Image (cartoon, rainbow, N blue to C red; front, side, top):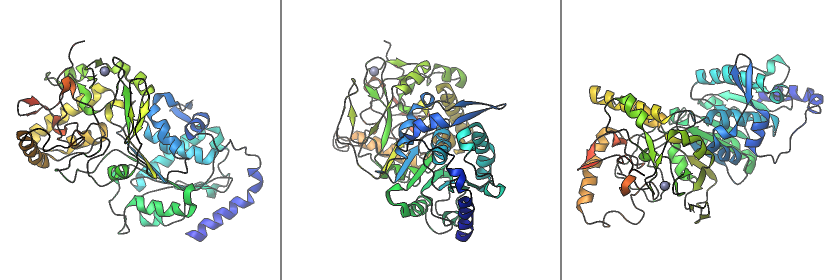
Amino acid sequence: MKSKMSEKYASAVVLGQDISSLSFPPRRMPVADAVRQYMRVPMGAGNSLPWEPNLTPYIVEPMNCLAKREFDAVVFVGPARTGKTLGLIDGWIIYSIVCYPAGLLVVQMTQEKAQEHSKKRLARTFRASPEAARRLSPQRNDNNVHDKIFRDGSVLKIGWPSISIFSSSDYKRVALTDYDRFPADIDGEGDAFSLASKRTTTFMSAGMTLVESSPGREITDVKWHQEFPHQAPPTTGILSLYNRGDRRRWYWPCPHCGEYFKPAMGTVTGYRDITDPVQASEAAHLCCPHCQGRIDATQKRELNNRGVWLIEGQQIDRHGNRSGIPRRSRIASFWMEGPAAAYQTWAQLVCKLLTAEQEYARTGSEETLKAVINTDWGLPYLPRRSEVQRQGEVLMARAEPPGQTRGAGGSTFSGGDRGCAGWPSEPLCGAGHGIRCAGGTLGDRPLLAPSCAPR
Ligand SMILES: [Zn+2]
């Protein structure tokens, strides 16, 4: 495989004269700025638009971390419809071709997905983005579904999780997409992140591994109590990588009181008392955990554009002043939830949740519910059997005097966020948003926050 690769490099050397005609933008250009300038997003019928960072502002900081030498890896955990594939994967590919050429391996969850990504998305993106298109090698042999060679000799491989792919060559950059749908162990050689990191270590601090996915692995310890406000529940897969990193969460400033909060499942309210899922989902809104002010779906884009990532240990006041000591790690890790996702409405989120809950009640099958919690809400799933056990423990803990079972900052998971009306979130899903928020009650209290106090 390696000798085959060298031949390809050799063919690129012959193309040497072509490189001089290519101009390279300044290397210090932040990744997101470069993507905005050089990537056009195909819109069908031959039309395309420039990639627009204001549509998915939360993706800018993760993208820019990809070119920072202080990090070995960027980990992004988020639900579907956040624009993460477009910004992080396609964007990084374009950046790698146009701005700072180097070998890039993109690993999709299956060979079919890899083919689809290459043939459908990338082929169109390259056609629509002139700076990328003119860098493609004109030799037909250099451009097939899984391997693309560029005029400067750099290689883009689009592969799938198998040991032959991971050991084919050394790449300065490796991107693992839909990570929690990968096998936990690749052909008996270990997890994909470790294998990918081995490929990039040759390049020392210039190497970079990107991992993105919605959570897909179950919570492994139902007795888990959160020690730090941004800590994710114990799972294998991407959330364990997130926990190893510096743990950034996405915050919005409340339009009423200015205090920052996480747009998380626990802040979505107003739909529990309505039986019809469609009507209920239309009534869904957010409730500021600080002032109980009502936030409507029409405000989402504006709040995303005023949003900030806070690292574990950082705080922010209502004037935007940061304090605290940020956690340090060689992994920049990010986790955002469904309510902030640009391309999914709150009504869709709630409707899918209620429909899945009804299906569970009717059939006893958790599959749809798990998929909705994972891929739409961006949360890990706690199986119902574990939850029954957990509920018993929560009730027992409550029977003890306050303060004895929960240390300072202990199991109040959402980092100072309180449920509406000052109720603490119930620690049932581990992430603090009540997987069991499924309309049940705990004792005499509903598991999700009640409707907001009128303002
Ligand atoms: Zn507020």
